[in-house]
Image (cartoon, rainbow over all chains, first blue to last red; front, top):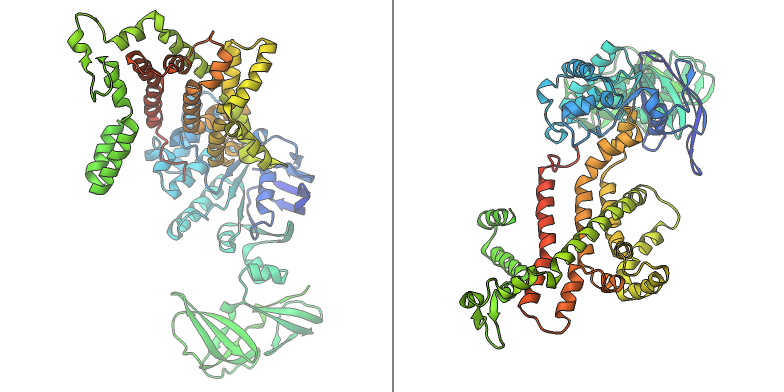
Length: 345
Length: 287
């Protein structure tokens, strides 16, 4: 169990600055996602924590001790690569035992720990196979076992769910979550997929252009993004310019009352599509009522997304597919004040 | 082995036209050897006969062995000495070449530096410049420093045309081997030496074997450079063959030597093919 801390970490590659300045606190036993678009520096951050890159400036602390200059081999971290990097010429068994073998652990102990870890990842019956004979999920479990057998103080994963199909994703998500909670190992993973980050992490660090943009729990990040860019990256669709006065935001389609704190002046108002209620007749409550017309409909199976034209603005409403509202139907939208978020820059 | 798999392919998958085409190619490759084999078993084969006028079998009481083979295995022919020299030089060249090219290929495959394209072009220069030009220039230098007529001299000149091939082949192999594997090994605690021995080398092995085989074959086939540097003191199979046929006659003994010259390559090919096939990881690298 190790707490990881990044203090003013910076990384330059020649003239290019990959990370300009990152401060990050990861508590012991926490599962943290580094989320950002490709090229934002999240993988570089992970590689610096692992010791594969040396920071140009700043410090990386494990439990308060500076490890910035400690060699990879001595840092006692674990990393699961995106493409698993299983050694193709070794069997599952040899792959998993590799870390202990190179450390000169004695044979009996290697054997013992190999048995234990193969049980944990449920790979006993595949132990004599070569990586080429395994499925994607099995390869990932081998990669995880190979890392965990060395008892790393920090576990790192690069896009852990990216290479798996939808069905396997759920299975691996539960597997990683359970394992992480059982072992209580501090885990950091990198992803460009906000769904993957929210699925797995206790806290998500959003990184844009080599800077930490926001560091929060998944639901906070989803409901209360700190900037338009973050809202956009987290998949928000209904973001409108608005004028704030007191507890009222005046948007192009009307005035909305909101509950959160905000200062007067120009800002953006964000409405989460699933928080909006869609009525076919004029509802009794008049607060936060928007009138419009259904201009488009997208069917996703369990959910339907309606695009409602309210004056010049297009508001997207996500609803469970219990009914189908016709196109061009006149509708009334309502949204509770406490589900409205104001983004101020 | 090759024939068996070819016949399966012939029967099961190919159209008659494709079979014919394959046979033509096989004929084109193997055809030239037929007169050599016939020649080596002839007693007298004079123009314009399509087949030898007299076969060795008919003259058995006059010659215990076919004339060609009798000559080839006699010490006068120097075939044995030349074979040893060829194999020895080929092996040393291959090993040195590997030691030079492995680190070079690693850098060329993974790093980018100023002037890299020019450097890569420069590497193929020995393949573009005529061998005779290199040979004569080097001979003048080597005579001065006393390397002419020595094994060292021959090995050094053999490195000139083999290094470009080897570097190209190993660069391609290194490009196929991502950094991930070595970085993963590092994170797992392996030292540089352990990574090289347990991860990099085994993964590069098929490429190394192919490169080594190619280098060996190129080395055993170099005539001109060997001829210049050997100065007649060191005989290899190609120089022996050339001196044998340079008079313009292709007699039975020349045919015999020619057949012997092809043997090391074929043996090596069979060994390495078996060796590569027995490696269980021919299936691709982990994805």
